[in-house]
Image (cartoon, rainbow, N blue to C red):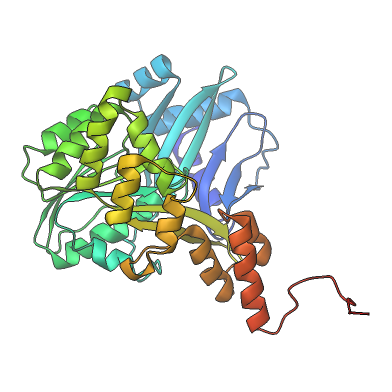
Length: 381
């Protein structure tokens, strides 16, 4: 199996369905792609019913291309991350990993066109975020929920409005930003720096106004990120958390118990926005993002300092903060349902509080003149 055959496989997989996001090369399975959130098989002219260990290993080594650092990572840690370009057709973020003694390959398709706040239909709060001068803006969610795409749209808006120096630290570089009003230096983990912590430490000496950190993976990176946000930089980054409350707790959990009171004080001075997102199945095919957005205000500061209580939660504060651009997942999901973008089943399945989403759905259905219950025939004697 040679490079042209590898590229033929990749091209065929990309063109097999609409809305392909990931390519999956796993021993014992056919070629598979994830399209609109579903993993489906791909047929080639020479049909492959089950991939062999030899095929997946040759595929992996063609992607690695003899890179000694990647090979060392694969041997020492069991996986490696890299980027791969299919000519000018597409770019991929690749993870190659060992499982049961065999190699598997997952290729995440990267968009070549820079997204915009308008094209992604992001909430109006993102217009405010682009005008922040310093502090932390965190975008959180599960793997594949579109965090990098959202941050790229925010950077694109800054790029079109501000004459800033922007440094990005990524694994790998996903969106290649053109120089518009801002000047971009985009650095890739492994090729341009060895760890996010070291890359971020170096960025402080590179005179940036904005720093994008691909992920706050550990305590050291978070510590330097806080320092950067405190010293006049706007720091954008991601975490794998499901909502704003868990985001704060995850950051605190990176530090020792005796350090947490000081970290709480640092967070209330640095965090500007926390955006959490989930991808929901879209009516008619595809997926649509639902977002929880938290901005800093006095009530959020109090919760960060003293923690949540039964009658004081991040959810309640966000729910009441619409005038500042805040919204809960449930509020946004109800908007998507009202616009006909998601089904009632999806709204209930992806919500945060089932009682809140239930009340909201009943109100919307009542306004439409639809039945809000399946119980009929009740009457007073």
